Amino acid sequence: NAGVTQTPKFQVLKTGQSMTLQCAQDMNHNSMYWYRQDPGMGLRLIYYSASEGTTDKGEVPNGYNVSRLNKREFSLRLESAAPSQTSVYFCASTEIPGVGHFGPGTRLLVL
Amino acid sequence: GQQVMQIPQYQHVQEGEDFTTYCNSSTTLSNIQWYKQRPGGHPVFLIQLVKSGEVKKQKRLTFQFGEAKKNSSLHITATQTTDVGTYFCAGWAGSYQLTFGKGTKLSVIP
Image (cartoon, rainbow over all chains, first blue to last red; front, side, top):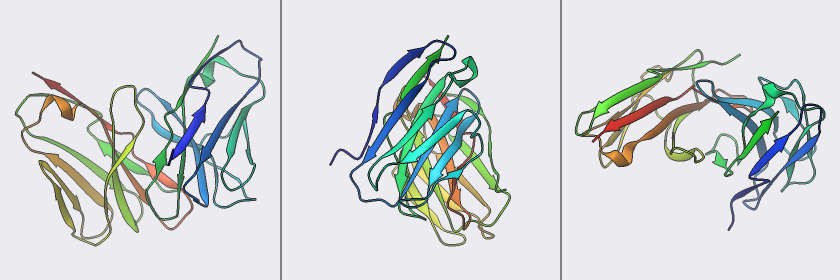
């Protein structure tokens, strides 16, 4: 069991470039989440998918889009990266109201 | 929306001293969870409390859930350098969102 996997681990982008962060889980969880973590700000929810076929905005959705590709995969897309999106991004999955299982994170630097 | 407040934001302790972090929710929680994040790592689940007034222990860690199910605490007795990291509380409040506190970053001075 790999749990929650994320790719890439690190990424450097220039302002205006786009990229997609990939997340996959093998625990057959219905719900998946994208968080960003900035110093002193804790974990802020960007988007979530309560079940396959649904997605909803979290606390900080601006500048992001998501796709729940299937039950296993949930991707996060930055269409036009900005320096304010420099952060560590975590994907998580769970069965509500259960334990959150986190991926190892993607460290993104936008220049 | 639901808010989860956590204090203190930072705590520096001498090795062997005790440490406590507190968590308060703006709404009643169905359960509360605690996570630990080591430097450079990802949040890892520690424990879940479900019942009003529940107390659970894991070796030197004691977790409490308040009677009103809106607050919680984590107490570490006799801290060790291996306790270093950021501790987060998180709660479900009947929505699809697991809301996290901002975390308490613990530094332990050897």
